[in-house]
Length: 225
Image (cartoon, rainbow, N blue to C red; front, side, top):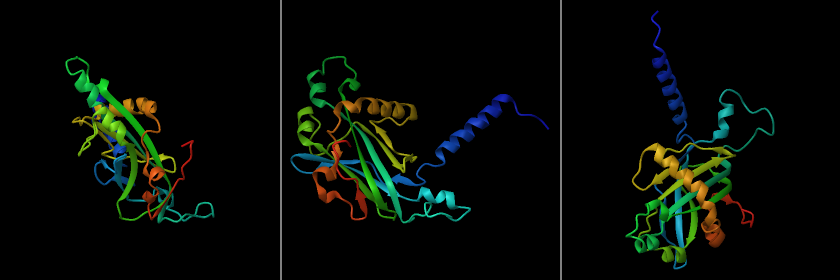
């Protein structure tokens, strides 16, 4: 039997790893559409993340067996401890226009924000869910990116269930870039720099209680969140 050259074996291995990494994308949760940003009222801007829950990851362990203890039992029609986190980036258009004759790169004008929403429990069905956050309109006006259509420079979405991160195919958007390396670099920058603007972007139900979903129990507000 003719043996394959080492580089062919290495290529085969790398391809199998890549396929394995992406096999789980959108298996349990997917984004139903792009993140939308619009005016809630004169004081607040709403950021909405539409997502669908497709499968219960807790059922994986029972493919070949039935639960045998009380602790293992759970209602498969509900997902517990689902977290939606967003890293959001806007460009400070005021500073960019003021210094338009300078040679500063666009990245010097990026402003990053982040927030997380926790569902203690949420119903698993075919309906699209919306994780809603709000952002002060005064900051958008001050920094020049407000208006009828508010276009973010980029965002990155993380969704986890029971502490397990879900693989989502279209979770990162950054300007017109589509290559994976640039998108991952953008997310890294957002994670590192958003802490400087902590508590600016917040879950919508902190300000507007009506944003509680009828089929979900949201985590109550705490100063330590």
